Length: 506
Ligand SMILES: NC(=O)c1ccc[n+]([C@@H]2O[C@H](COP(=O)([O-])OP(=O)(O)OC[C@H]3O[C@@H](n4cnc5c(N)ncnc54)[C@H](O)[C@@H]3O)[C@@H](O)[C@H]2O)c1
Image (cartoon, rainbow, N blue to C red; front, side, top):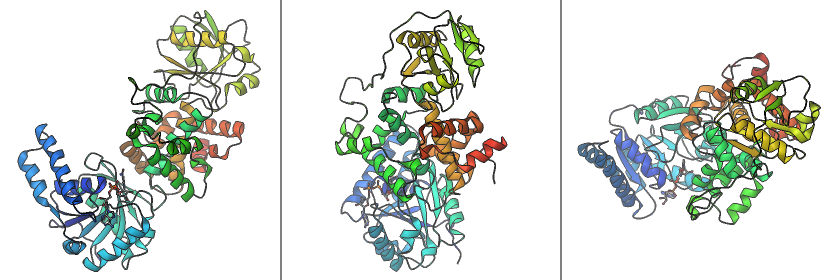
């Protein structure tokens, strides 16, 4: 059977007029398509049209849309009195409550009214497209079109074929997504598809870092923004999205991958959700939005020390570059050789903690301080102490790095600092998505850039940092912690060993 979503007179019916449905209907009408909207709740469609009307008025006022164009959009949006009105639609997009039984029930009712060649697409975030379709008489006509919130703004759409979808359905939904001005990627029917799966590294690992007393939420956010270039820190993001929503996604992905350790949710987060510390929507999350300035103080306060005249630096990854930066700031930095009377011994470990690096290099732990050099970032430095580092050595290390002109965040001992851990997890989860054939490497990266707003996709981040160095971080973290969540994926290990890009196909 042919699938034709290209025809000029295609009518789209959107079911569910909530946050997503109204936005999806607006996008379709803006693309020139006659668009019907239905909701089970009386008055919901009128509310949705009023909200779209108001939003478009704002666009007209800003000169982004003409009044005529706006009138055209509103003319193309039509309410449905009942599901029987979907009979004329060639494509139905479902955006109702996230409940398998309710969605299956709706799909069965829709099939009674629709033409045999009509397509039904679900906007589900966490259910299986195949499972929803299994309740249908024509599962071959059912697929997934996963929009992002708010649909008129977010360019990304994930297109998902179910296991029983017609072989041409994905291509037809891709073309339709482009027709309504979106940038689609293709994902297989797997938990979280691409974007909600890829997002399981940033928040959960940040929660572990704070839970282990390594840094404060504010420390982590500032580092990820100022050192690694993220637009939002993980705790700002958790507060924006809402702890309840994020925690539910974490639990869903973990359960649906049958307890894969990489996706372990945070026990601390469960308590915060139970306590109503959900973030912006309740006024308090990791930040207090009722306070004059929503700040999270640094975990450690370092007693100021004079700038040291000289320091010793281990001759390891990034040590030479650190020496150049310090020498340029007027601090004499000796790289390698026998450490002497210098007040600070800098180490630059990958995935190893400061304790481990000091003992491996046979350094006096009291003077040993670690600096994160994985990304060669210079916007902000992380310095990390071990339990025996003296306040004098730690303060001198901070003063030395501040002399280069960049701010410094001081943290407790951690396998992989903060930025290393987060980036290595993001890359490894991205590699797992590639390994599980959820999507093509380029689609994984564009999904993450467009859907999560990271500065780079996970595979591009891995290539930028160097696959072998990311592998070294994960291997050292796993060796030190014996925790299987840090085991490197075969996708990453093979490419790191071969010295090739993470985009390299099998
Ligand atoms: N909110 C998001 O960020 C987001 C992002 C992507 C996907 N989604 C998915 O989109 C879907 C809708 O989410 P939302 O945030 O718009 O929810 P919402 O609660 O804002 O809206 C759901 C709407 O569906 C209506 N509804 C419920 N059962 C119905 C039925 N049987 N028939 C017709 N209408 C019915 C409700 O009255 C409500 O107006 C869910 O599957 C969700 O997982 C949500």
